[in-house]
Image 1 (tube, rainbow over the protein chains, first blue to last red):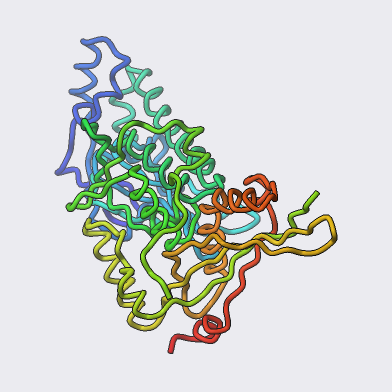
Image 2 (tube, chains in turn cyan, yellow):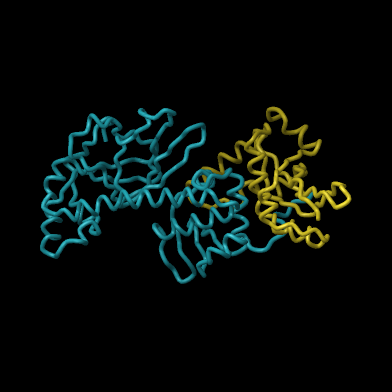
Length: 259
Length: 142
């Protein structure tokens, strides 16, 4: 995707509502079918690594709705000092990277984007908006996606306020599991590229503290790691009150080292 | 009634052999992203940028006779300090200590000193480095 523009590759286009059918779930069958046919948008594929999205609102034509993530995983990172605070984004999230108020803020912060897993975004430009204009509920559904992002970031902020890092990590994993996990008889399996450094930034803790917390949670049989890297959140789903009291279980020490 | 003055931890260096036994990246999973992270951590360790420590937690309590008593028998292993020493180590120590305050409360209770976990969690936290550790990590990696 060329930096400074929100134009995808028109030779690659997609019927948005076939990829994201929830957006038309509020329509009747006939309208939904019409919307699926007319809701065509150009797509852009994003490779893993730093992403330089369009950031100047003045460059976007009026009526541009945003970039809809169809697949993959991204992070939007906000940095005030040195440690970025990430927001994880995936399929269904609506991005408007040019909507950044930092230049008007009294105190400056920085934003940078990273593609954690190769991603595809649909460019919901003004032409797309006109095409779907007969169906106002779709606009409502898109607005709902921005509300979902707000709820997620609020939850992330609440988690970072918890005292214990093992509680923060476990509660975060369960909420990531709610969105990205797959239910299995033994628990929820989560296949996300979660380094301990990323987990630390997500919960506001030092990376070594996350490593220690993961060990404690594994020892307490709250999580299991699969050889391929999957996180398994073991059943039963813990009670929140129990987690906040003693998420890592009853332990006196950890590790085998002695001086 | 005893008064909690502060909680803290004495960080003690462990033998280098303990570091090898412990496994710097032991709990790190095997996803490609984590393997890449583990490789980076190992490279930093080989440059001398990490040191395994044990945290020995303590609670300083003012007794009814006005004497300060230190209660300490709870420790946390698996703590890794950055070299050179800095605020990130203090934060890591505090975060690690938080996971053991229940045990510290139980120990205090066994000594007849009733201090709720919540009070331990909000008390002033002090990190002390033992002499050997201070020599090793105050300053750039050697």
